[in-house]
Length: 439
Image (tube, rainbow, N blue to C red; front, top):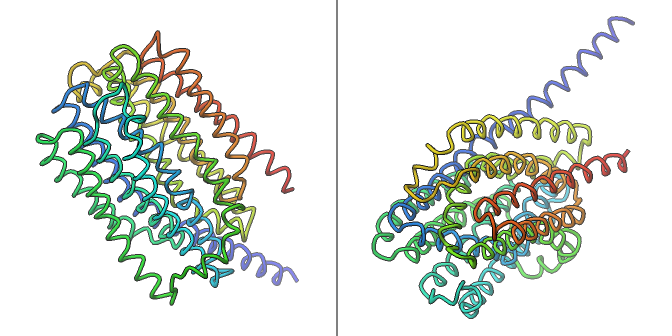
């Protein structure tokens, strides 16, 4: 009897170890390719920003930062939440309901392309409203429109490929995109300034879209999936059940950041102030890259786990939160130790005492929020996330209104820090409440 019990115990332990090893291998494969591709993309964007800052000065760098904030504000609306929806739904349906994949991909891909095109038209027809201080920004707004469309398609393609866990394919496309961004921007920025930088980024992203398209066609061909309008109509329920709350969950973030930067831009010496903040914010992106990339591969893996094993799902969430926060704290401590030396890479006029420190602290909290956001999305708690992100946006805008007039770039940095802290509290409440409800 003891021998039988011992044998069963060993078999059970062996099954658990095998499952853990399989999950670990999935994470390692996803992490390696995701960090490789996204790291190169982030480095290329950082290099382009640095080139604009050093070649064109604080005024034009502020305009470049404002233009990127405009793209970010419209990107989620243009994509209609299809990037997150496709990633989560494809991952959840691949094993259990493969017959739904055709409809899900057709719906997400189609709506993203249409939404991106409509947003381009909106930008070009409302230039006078978007352009700050009544400036003539025809060339810049054209760059914003083209970059917006290519980024919308790219984000949805990456979402679909992430759902299939094709992280190597995504990395290849991002590598091509990164090299093209640096090469093209180096050529066009000295001649065409900010408009050239934006158009150069747009062309690079479009190249990435082309590579993603061929990779996606290969996956669909291997699975005998043919995209069609009729199959997309069958999945229209996703729009209400997941896409709309997903859109609302992320909607307050970019527009609120754009409003906050607009408030700072419309103050006295607005562009130099925004340049000082944005140069620090670019360093912040190095820290938050960890959270952004991990969220990309965490979402499909966590979604798959949630549909099969709630215990493993909770363990994976807890491990992810602690790991991401720990690494972010380590990287952030380096920035806080040498703020003036780090900011000097942009040249003179960009360093404002306290701005980098506040931005770094907000980045560390943002990494924790990113891990929790992926956990909430994988569990389908998108409406709760939407309310939490709305609170984030309100805190950021109100804080900027109160602090920016007197403190400039430092006021916007403090507003961002307060908003991230509010979001951390909200996400934590939603997660623990959801767990108690499940039990």
